[in-house]
Image (cartoon, rainbow, N blue to C red; front, side):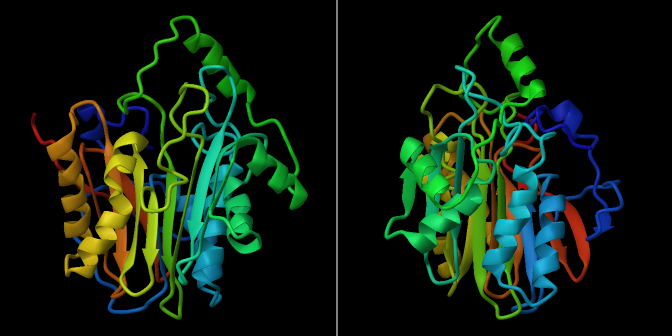
Length: 332
């Protein structure tokens, strides 16, 4: 399986492969290839998610979509599977802490009506995506932060629990020996899960959740809870989501930009590529990675990244497929 810590380590990424797996996720990926924008021929239920953990997220989301469920429910329940997996170190329980040893989480969600909710810098709550949905549905606000977000979560019935696992704590103790802090995406473990879905009605929703950049400064918040940066949904056009170094995603509002590019006629692949090129033109991209995914109202989907190695899971018609995106840096 792809070792995501080596996000831009080309020597390892060159050996990856792609395969098809059923939505019961019984098979490992065996072969991988770059996929062009693919069309599903209209408003056919589909779900797409970032990285290999997108497979298990899609599996859960597909259960909902295949039973005529709402896209919003699919993208919430899908990423909750990843949030609850203590083996992961970038989302939910087991997430890599900040440099002071605190696991802080960010998440956002957006529905087909343009409603959105988010939480950032929240601690001790395993499912920030569900708190974000409560913010969307139960408050007049879009985002709650820190202690306020925690207070709201507890008022809504969420229970506090320790998120720092023994594995993550041990890695943090080892990191403290050198305390090397580099807010760049190279060998840092930073694998946001973002998920987009279309349901049987042709309605689109999306979600994003993460524990953020490993060993970040206390209080740092990336793009993951920012509507328009990590996630944007326009039910008339499509949706986009992001993973990678949040600072440059925020500075370019990548997901909103991609939806606007699609509004103007670009395919999901073309729109994702153009958003990446906005970063390439403005910033030093050599040691950072950003990957985008997008779907449009016609059922096309695609993605693009700065460096090799970004992959996503697409589930439709009972098949869950890992696809490696095309990328900008080739042979540099």
